[in-house]
Image 1 (cartoon, helix red, strand yellow):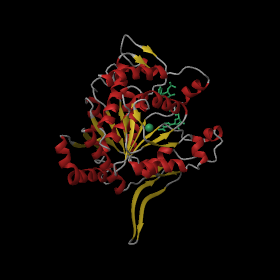
Image 2 (cartoon, rainbow, N blue to C red):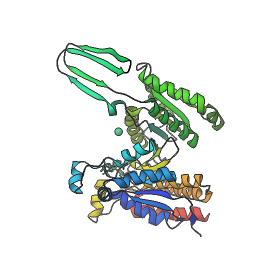
Image 3 (spheres, rainbow, N blue to C red):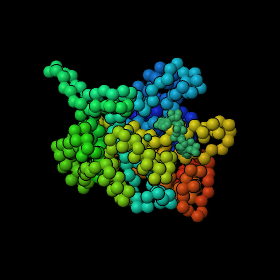
Image 4 (tube, rainbow, N blue to C red):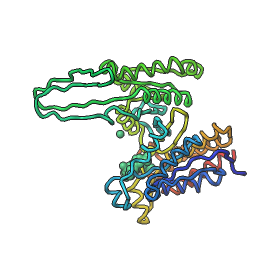
Length: 403
Ligand code: NAP
Ligand code: MG
């Protein structure tokens, strides 16, 4: 069979540790034999980032702006211990933070659903995608510890003078915090969410606490509502999907009772906390995909998990590992499918869909990596190492391609 051709390069960002090993195997076993891969390769291995003073990360993000679609391997975010381990010139920023600040994107996280792996919430039948606003609030807050009695005030100064409000008259020790957000960032977030809902043809929920934070959360609520009415009401109606705002407490109660199958847009902190809750309740971090979508419509696909350091140390010691490659594989299929859609290459999108189907079939057949073995409710099941797992996917892919 002839290989499937591509036209526009896919931006490929390689990474670190166990995920770098899996990256290579996935390409060798499941992509390169079938696709005439056209990619622009950026190696974000920590040593390569160090050698380029981290310029390579910026270049990779700029290439994503140029071509529109990227696939990224997990990367180490250096801490003091990594600086020593890799003898780094400095403690570089998280590559994801660098890329996100260049693309100004919103991250959508979606679990991969397989019948034999039951979510802890028994009503959930379809994935719940969490969209987390990634700017401001407590992540850019100013904090203060009050040790002695005094008055705390909120002061805003501009050309016309000063505005003051009393926050609290402290008679005893306590704590203070102030935070901000920007309409521009909230607008980008809202548009990314509305666009992604149209992409997935799923309802969009947004929640906040505007009954309490009438101005702050009220701003979020109003911006979403205004953009929806002005730009998205008609396309949503045409796609048969809905936009729905509710209070965060009500949203949580509804999410737990729901069947899934929608996108839940969350403010920064809510998204941070709720994405861990949703990922855990669906089963495994290794079954969670992540895509960064910019307001201009650039896409960067990756797995939600990190570089799986513990498994990498075993692998380097020559021990067998059973690391789950599914979320990384789905980052590849997500990116190839998107390239297929944008470049009008249906064969590429169909291949991506079959590769996803083959992976799900493998898990449904009880051929499992170790993390999935404990979660699967099948009676006939076995653990295989990562490479055998990929070979089993390939068998099923071959059958689907021949059909
Ligand atoms: P991690 O790599 O996600 O791994 C945490 C644990 O989750 C693993 O030890 C493993 O549990 C389990 N796990 C994660 N992915 C798995 C998979 N595919 N298959 C099987 N089990 C899996 O998180 P971390 O250990 O906190 O971070 C390691 C490095 O990754 C850090 O240097 C961090 O900076 C980086 N990181 C990068 C990204 C990114 O690039 N997007 C995201 C997060 C973290 P068991 O050990 O119990 O088997
Ligand atoms: Mg978190």
